Image: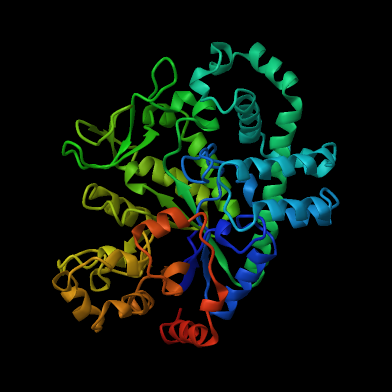
Length: 491
C-alpha cells in the first residue's frame, strides 16, 4: 500500500450537472473545461464534482441505479456531433426543446432519445468499444442487461420481474440478452461515451494541476443493478426486498429520517474478501484524485429500521466490518487521498473517527455545524487535532447564508464572536476565510457560498442537481479576493 498523497489546498464544490448548458443540465463538454480554467485562475487545487452515477428518479436525485455506471445525461451532445454521431440540426432542436429547464420527467426521456440516435450511427464493432467492454465486463454486463430489462418492463423494480429473471437463471438471462440486444448495446454505448468524455476531462484537469474529488457512497438503492446482481451481499427477504433499510439514529416516535437503502450482509462480503467493494474503490481511484466515502460511519455500525416504516423509531444497530473493509479499500486506493465523511455522524458513531485516524484517512469537518455554543464542538477549527481534515463551509443542507438565516441574534452570538463579524451578511465570507485559515489539508467551498447566494436550506437540496451559477456574480473584484485568500493561507 502506497503513501496517500495529501496536498494543502482549496477547492470548489459544484455538480457537473450545474454547469452552464443549452441542453437543460451541464455536461462533460466545453463548460466543464472552462470551469477547470476558472479553478486555475482562482488558484484552486480541487474540484469536488458530486455524484456522477445514474439516478433512478427522473429528477436526477438519489438513489443510484448502479455503483459503477456513469450518468448518461452528463454526456456532451456537441462532442457527439463533432464525431458525426449527431447532426447540428438534431442537437439544435434538442436545445430548443430543453430550454433552460433541468432534466426532469419528459426532458430526461428526451435526452435518452437523442442518445439513441447517436447510438444507431455508432460502430459497435470498433476495437476501442470491444476493449472498453472487456475491461469493464465485471460490472458492465450486469448493468446493461439490468437497464434493458428494466426499460422493457417500464422501469418496474427488479423484485417484480419474472422469478427466473429475478433469480438470474442462465437460460432466462440468455433469452433476455438475445431479445434485448439493441437496448443492451445502447446502454453499453452510453457508458463508453461517458467514460471517454470523463477521462478526457480528467486528463485536462490533471495537466492544469486540478485534482478531482469524487464520492464513493457507502449505500445504494434497492432497485439497482448491483443489488439485483449481487443480492447475496445484502440483507434481503426471499422476494429480494430489504429486511432493514438505512435510517438516522433518532429513535423518537415520528422523528428521524428513513433513507431507504438496503443494509449489507457483511459476513457474505467478508467471505469474498470484499471483492465487490474492492472493485468499487478501484473504479473510484481511476476516476478521482481524492475519494470521499459518504456515510463512512456505516463501516463501524449502521442504524436500520424495517422496510416500509415511515420514521426512524423502533430500529436497531448493525455492526459493520470496521477495519477489515477499511484496509481492503485502502489497498485499492493506493496513493489516492481518502476522505472519511464522518463529520456529521461522529456523535452517533464515535468509533468512526477513531477508525479513520487509524487508517490514515482525512476526517470531514463542516463549519455550518460548528456553532452550537459548545466550544468543544469537533467542527470548530481550534479543535482540529492535525492537518488530516477536509473542511467545508457547508454541504448537502443548503447555502451557508440560508442555514443561518432564521437563527436569532442570541443563537448567533458565539458565531459572531468566533468569526469577528457583526451581521448575517458577513457570515458566508467569514466562513470561507475561516476554512482557508484552518490547518485542514483540504478546504472546500460550495459554489453557492462563493457567490454569496443566500437562499434557504431547500435551495441546495433542490439545486445541487439543477442550479446553475451566474458567472457575472463572480466579478474581478470577487475573483481577486479568492485568489488573495488562497495565497495568504497557502492554499
